Image (cartoon, rainbow, N blue to C red; front, side):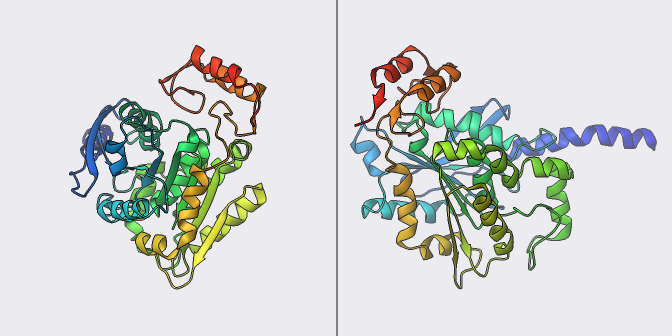
Length: 357
């Protein structure tokens, strides 16, 4: 019996990894302008799926590059909201409320929390940051500086947007946390009226964070933004939180709002009266303020790509950023967007040196 138990314990990680691999691809979603794509992820060691919405201007303007909104879904089937969201953003683009943009829908599995699991079975953060974004930039005509990217999500995706966005302010000009959760400091401290059964909560806690409160806190948006506050401030990241007043996650979002205030990070915080935990209702209820967020990111006064920190001048800080990032890779320092920070990027900084008119 002891030998059998030891064998089962050795087998469990392999079974978990096999189950994870089975979730890396979803079924295709059919919606106007939406494409289903597969790519090989080095982090996951397997094929991973995502969906992407391309506005009509993408085909009509073959030389143009476009900003990208990365939308992180909540727990459960992340493909269900793609048709509504794509139509919602497409309508706004057609009405001129927001500029034409690509909308990428990563596959975050059912309960990944957009986090690298402690066991290593589901390296979700690494897949998104290290594999998916470079893949999108390499295969679509995107704006490859942080002012060309927004990271947004709802519920699990809202806390994921905070985690990843504050971790990498060099990649994202805007971070939008909608109905964000879980962002309580103790995952097992369930909010009032939580719809997650206790048994499922314990399973998520084990699968993602290894039932380790220290790992949970280390991967928490609270800790990450505290550690990365100077970088977030230097990047002038546009940050917002929003959720409905009837959402059980209001108290923890109140706490996070106060935490951002304490850190001196400018942000908008909106609690919408009479609205619950529904992404479509939250987005629709924000009204014109919603479109103002996207426009604030994509029209930030940083017209000179060589002004990497958007300081209003191309100077030693921008030169240092290029030298620090030297070599293969995408990001703000890759000024020409060729996937390599090198001589042409350095020349771009030196040519544009000085105050920006």
